Length: 137
Image (tube, rainbow, N blue to C red; front, side, top):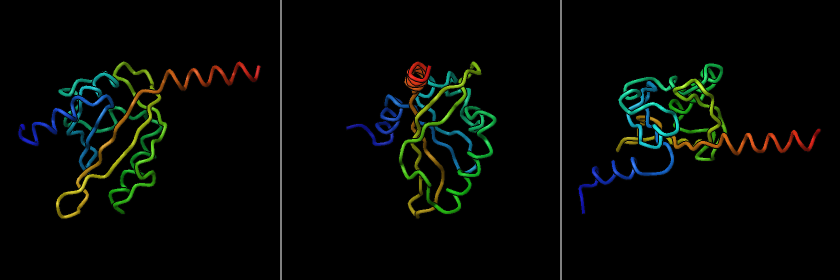
């Protein structure tokens, strides 16, 4: 059995969904391979950068309001339920992604950051939209 932190790092890197961890300031400190595939940025490009890198401008105010509220109260409105939102690809293309969020606490229970898991659902959303438009025309 390998050292737990080595194993943890491999698990994080090998899961199919994008996994992004940010500290309380919104600075990205974990970025797995699936995040690179989804968003187009390498870990070297994003580590130490702000989450705004992948949040479309029109959603930033709402994101930070929710982020700050979650840090302050220690509770998230969505409580692990997936939410459909938009995200930015490195190319500038907007994606539809399904995300789940969780607060991360230290051993004493203090919130130290937030982790998000994301998957690309752009094709599904566009397919559903096309089907709705076809029905209504």
